[in-house]
Image: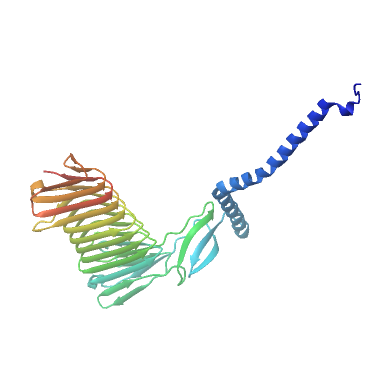
Length: 356
């Protein structure tokens, strides 16, 4: 006897079982979507942070705009050792202070130090007064006999370093020390700068020492018996310079020299290239030497002189070595002259050329 009860249909029971099983599998699979969401957040965490900073900048910009009634910006700075927030007005008028120095030719020793400011040293123009120009800096000039000391602290006796600015139309005022005095009689010039560039032009001194942290150094039309340049995180450029003994060191930045003459040069660059064109050994230097070293960067040296006057030893741990167009495998030694040239680089190529 057949059972006609629809509730006992075996096909319907099988379909119900299959549906229940599929529902259970979907239920088990749904919780796995949460770890996927967390993974997505982890993969895009820097994008989320960047969007948050943009939003914060827009809020601070709006606050500056409403507070001052115009197009304003905001700055986060370190001031007097503390982290502070400032509203910044665009196109701030430059504040310039000139300190005249009488009888500037009497100084034989000049010391300049600055923080978060550029330093410029140039000869005074004929007929113009000697002195120091401070731009957006509090002036600090001390005279001690034949020694001139220039230092400064910006913003009313404090120190301030901009970290970053928010807003549009905001221009950071230039901070600079510019020294203009007769430089013919100066024996020693010492410059110490942090977070700012250094430019020296038209100087003839016995000793020049420049120490720069986080800023470029530029030397033009310069003569010195002793030259010492120490840099960190900034390029060093020199044009038309001559010195007897030079030492140049920087941890992160390139060295570029054009039309340079020396007796002895020792240059050591940790991370950056060395490019010297128009190099020559000073007349009368019987045993002038050149020692160039770079840990990570190429070295190119173009020498004005006869190849027979030099002897060279070149070594590149990982890179090519070329001498007057000839290619060598990581090392080249040659020449029999009196002036040694030593070039070493750990990661980078070496190129040495003589003009005759």
